[in-house]
Amino acid sequence: MEDQYFADQSPADESDLRLLFIESRGHDLQMQVSSKVFSSHRLDLGTRQLLAQAPQLPASGRFLDLGCGWGPLAVTMAAESPGAQVWAVDVNSRAVDLTQRNAQTNDCPNVRSMLAETALAMARTQDVRFDVIWSNPPVRVGKESMHEMLTSWIDLLTPDGAAYLVVQRNLGADSLISWLNTNGYAAKKIASKKGYRIIEVRLTHDE
Image 1: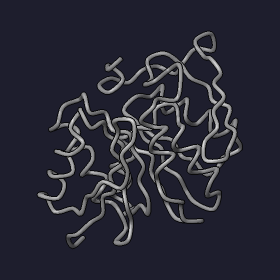
Image 2: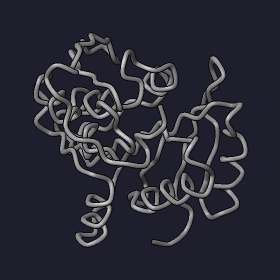
Image 3: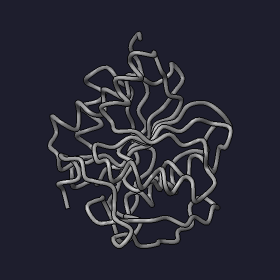
Image 4: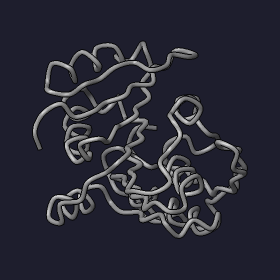
């Protein structure tokens, strides 16, 4: 289902919710999922690979889950680093609602879920910077839209911060690395498994 990338959805009705139990980086999480949100029946393979391969998080700082869906990355970040502030953003209001519910269910008060446009405007206005970004980006929106989304947020990394992206090899992971390096970032593959690349991206230009 791809319409979640383009249009907000109303918060899920209770009758549309289903419970999913996942183990993530040593944390047993109880998550609510719903239709019209990416991977509404299971933790998708790409996100699994990112969770398995991303480096250990700092104990504190400000983190971002870009394209949060129902929140597996954001809630894991918050559980792993309870001293950090975690922003979870998505274009889909149903996803934002689910992530906030799941953060509360799993006792992660350090998650703040917001619509992406609102969050980006706030971050720019308040000069917010992120120490870590995790994202399973929506490749199928097209290269131009995905590039714009990624760079808008990667530009908000701290000088020593890093973004970790998971992208399928056959959906252009290697070309994305090349594009990022050509456009002023330091990008490299740090892991490859089951057809997915884990890409680390850092700033190389003055902010």
